[in-house]
Length: 528
Image (cartoon, rainbow, N blue to C red; front, top):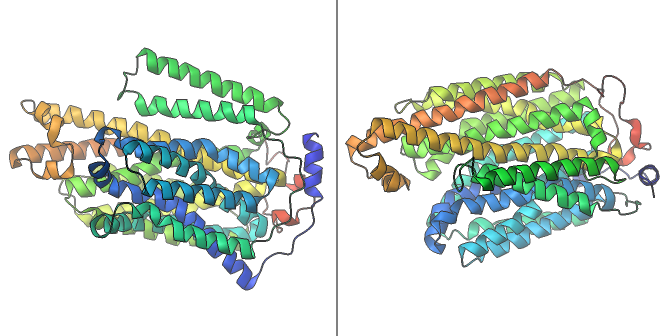
């Protein structure tokens, strides 16, 4: 069966009655719970990592608790989106939740670091589908013109999870057990599954199931190896080592083969034709650089607050409140404005500009910087991020053909995850190199001893003699400033890209009521 025939079958599916009132509210409650599962996992685990390694042993394997999830989640995201286009959104969303819950239960029961790393990979496989499928379901039940006010709520969920994650993580570690950072997912996930089963009714998908297994294998292998190059380069192996060079060449070859294969296969995982649409290309590029820069604030602001300012994990989570308030409020404001006016182009331009200013302010951090200055910078960054992050999804879903909604949504999510993965690794390398350089300059006599043991934990830094602790904290501040010196201009690239985002009229029907899949604009304003 050709892709045209498959598309025609999709277009012929029955029109479903749109959910309204209480039914729509219940659907969105379940979707918000699923989104909360995905976003909470990104923030709650980091708080418990020191305790986990103390309990299970294996401090040298600590980073793999995060990396295993990240690799599996990033690599599987496009697969979930494409499979949902073929099999139907509801059943695939439920499957991703189940896989995530199984991984969560196994992670909580882990007895060794090896088991935890393996089960985190299982959890990541399910997590790769949560966010993208939630946004795709929204496209099935809400018209693009009305979608902004709902997607703004999901931006608020992400903002809340950024703050609640460290707080819950700190509570479970101190009062219950670190295992509950994984077990807490189970009741939330089960509740969402029950509600989805009861109230989410989408028309059946009548398409021949053709899974591009070769494309999937090439993509997953290429992405995983590329991420490992960034993760291991300069740490496990020197950048010029045969291992890193060989892996880099392998990643390039695999990704090239993937692109060539996708151009030929009738049911590609990532339809290359989407890149002819300017909205999708711009949104994907902005998602990548935003993910890269955004993780600088999410990861390194708590480091500044805990190490330099001496705050506890719980207190540092509360001190990120301005960032949450900015994201939450502006996600709702931008979403409602898009729904009211139908215009979305302004928000990526304005939001990325404001976010760049917020990141630039972080480059001025000092040991004695008062909290109010840090709070203002966080608020500005949050306002910028909230203005455009969810709007990119609305613009993308509106611009692409209906049959590609899942693939397009997973595509932009995939690029944001890739940006976050590369950003975390690159900015981490910048921090480590700058810290080592500064300590060697400020403490030439004691740099070896300090780097060898004094910096292995927050408690170790706090226990350093004042004569050494002062230069160490100054070194941390300089290193963190350099991280944001990289993040700010990268966010500036998003501002440049935003000017190329075209304004396309938002459709007034959801994808389940589209009779013809190619009703998305395909004129010169939509494609290159």
